[in-house]
Each structure stands twice: as structure tokens, then as C-alpha cells.
Image (cartoon, rainbow, N blue to C red; front, side, top):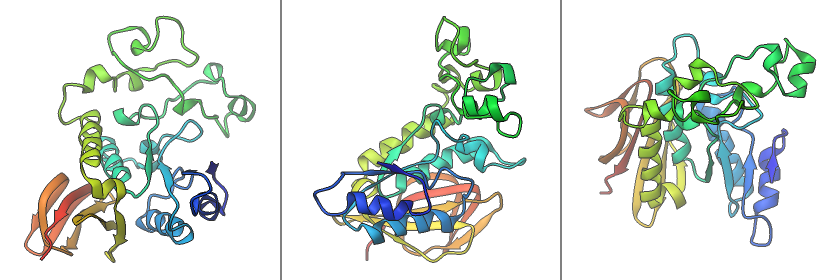
Length: 271
């Protein structure tokens, strides 16, 4: 079940609590413009408070909304850094992950002309509302091929140069690409039981940081995110062990300094 109204978290809980209902509910609550720590925290806490034995599915993009990288970025945003941080955050959340095609490339919204649209709401309400086609353009595989390798035939929507430039062929061998980060982070989630199954605990840290811990079967992991364009320094809340993922973060004596869209996933040393 997918729910998107103001009662969404409650409805998700109603549909998944106990053992005789649905296994999972898909949430639309992270598909909007709110990219604040409080928003993510309130969605997670609200669900598990209402359905402690339920299970959610979270996603940041889908075929009905603008892609999350342009949705959450500003004029000065490093969109690759934001794209990489986004998958690290999604992979650390308790619940199942939903990944929409092109996210793994840090794909941007396609700017379409009116005569290129296919979505009825866009055709009807242009230009105030341009419809949903901007996020629906084809997956890009190979920059050197027609339609970026999606099809030799003319696709339903066009592949434009800004989107084609993010093709798999251009990122696959680049260890610093958004695609490489997706592969790395998803492998981490697969290999760390605490990220897949663990309970969570949010820590009280200053805005715009989001920090929480995950615990499972004696394994503890801390997940730290700077959801802003500015540098943030956070007091180290625990003894850090093996660093699993580090983006634009420096571990100092008693604190962690995080650059714009910095993030850190590390084991917690238990005393």
C-alpha cells in the first residue's frame, strides 16, 4: 500500500501492524521539498511509534515527482555530493529502500518543451505546471549510442544532452562517481545487519545535522549527515571504530567536522 495524505504515517501503521496485515507500506512522505533533519526524524519516529511491529518502505524519488537531487539542491549545490549523500542516508534508514531509475546516476530533471510532453496534466496546465515527464525520460546507458543506449527506436520521451552525459558508460569505471557510490553503499547495507534489521536511536545534535545509531545482535553503527551547504562540527557522541563510509568528513579530537553534504557511517566501539 502507498499513502500520501496528512495521515500517511498513521495509515502506514494501521496497514502493517501485528502479523495479519500487509508486510510493508510504501511512503510518499519523503518525496517533497522538505530536506530537514526534523522531517526525516519525524517520519521515522512517527511510523514506528504508531506501528512498532510494522515495516515501512521509503524512497526519495519516483515517477510522479521531481527527482530529489534537483528538488533538494540550490544554485551552489554540488549535485554529485548531494546524490551520494542521499543514497547513504536512504541506506541507513530503518525500512526497505525504493530506488527510482536514474537515481544511481545522480540524474537531473529533464527540461522539456511543450511539444515534447506526453503527460496529460502537463499538457493541460502548461506552463504553470509542466507535468511529470521531466523525471520520466529514459534510462541512459551509453553516451555514444542513439538515445543514450535506451533504444534504437524513438522513445516516448527524448533523451537530452544533460541527462545523456550521466550515462552508465561515463560513470561505470569512475570510482568517484555517483554510480560507484551507490554500488558501495548498497553493498555496505547488504553486509551490515544493523543497517538492514537494527533498531534505531536518534541523537540530539544541532541543526542541520542528522545523527542516529542502529543496533542489531551486538553490532552498533552510527550514521551522521550534514544536510546543508555549510560546514558543521558535531561533538563525537561515541567512540568510533571501523569507518564504513566517509564523504567530506574529518574526524577530530572529540568531534566530527562535516563539509557540505558530508556523511559518515562508522562502527561504534562498545566499552
